[in-house]
Length: 232
Image 1: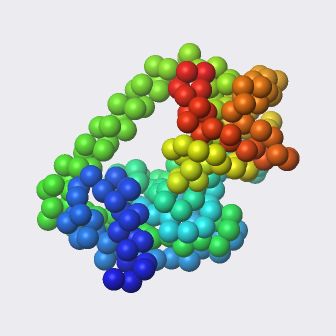
Image 2: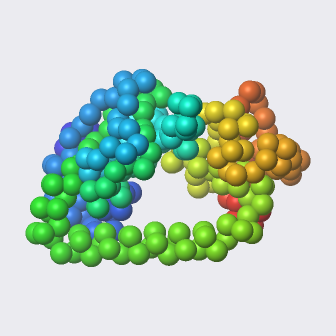
């Protein structure tokens, strides 16, 4: 088996399709098309339709939103092992955010037309996707219930966790580079810049993070950061 074929199967196993089992992922794998994305290249723009799912094999991309006046704000960073475009793949609707490459990247793309054809032939895959969406919906309901109780420290911890590369999100130490200014991060988290500064200072005092440069943080203990994200 070629290295990229195995890489694609590994990515599928960690995606929402993984719950359908190895037979289903092997059935889907030949439908993905590899695509090189150069630094600065836009994969798609917010509002565009196309119904595609992308699995990231290598590189670094950003999902961003363009604000009134033309200024853009980065919502989150995507790295190897991540995926994006899942909801438009299922419902054929527009992409909720724009995505472009921060570094030369390689992605695998699946079209909605190919997915629909396979689901019609594989009921187990369709049921597994329904189960995944039910799980996501329950998670959204829980987040709505918690939103009013989340403080700035909780939101800052979760933002730093979201910026970690996928392999680093479980435990150990890691490095984070903010893709935008601290003021923009505060706007994204819907907290004041002053409250965000105090939240980051608290994380530093408690030995969870250490600032290593402009927009750069060393996560001393990912597991503790995750707990702080849960409890604030």
